[in-house]
Image (tube, rainbow, N blue to C red; front, side, top):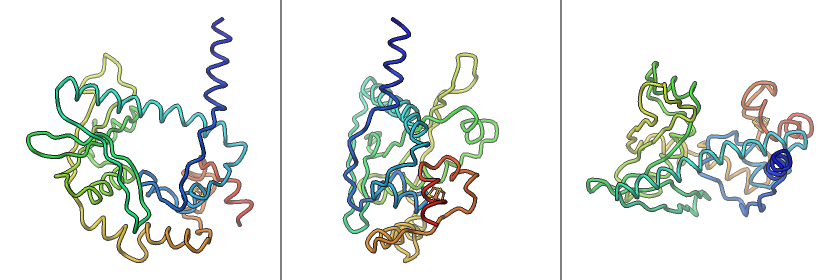
Length: 236
Ligand code: SF4
């Protein structure tokens, strides 16, 4: 029975087809730091390389863990009676959309939380021994975009969870980091003509494939990109 159940679960995980995203030229806020060419492929519903589909499907497992962490966070907020809501964010002019993690009211402040579950090595590097306290660029960009598109919020905060925590580990399982609005970030990415968003919008509007943002297909992020073959062998 257990073999059969395991097979069924694995098949379901690997072959479940999510409904096609209705993107129609909209850019996901959570992806704005990804390769512009990759975003262009995804927004146009380009089929991923067939040999990459299993990796792509397995990545859903990691995403599911992330969603569980966010769900757990909302349960903690409920138990603490801290009011929260989620907010759908859309900006027609920039063709950007996304959905925040819980926005809480705390000590009369409205705070956009962004929950991330990261693995031990990354957690140690960012918040552990090295104490760099610098969030990854992609996380920072996502939260800054939310802060600008939801001006009612006073500030943002990352709640970073250690995905591989075990009971022997010292230190807390979460790390909280407050983030203020960074106007310079906004101007550089959204307002300047060669900012990422105006640039990507131009490629989408004119149906032109953007150039590659990276020059080595065997190194990250190309090495795990689901459009690697298409990008390097077809669209040369
Ligand atoms: S293979 Fe590299 S350059 Fe090509 S779309 Fe993917 S990340 Fe971008």
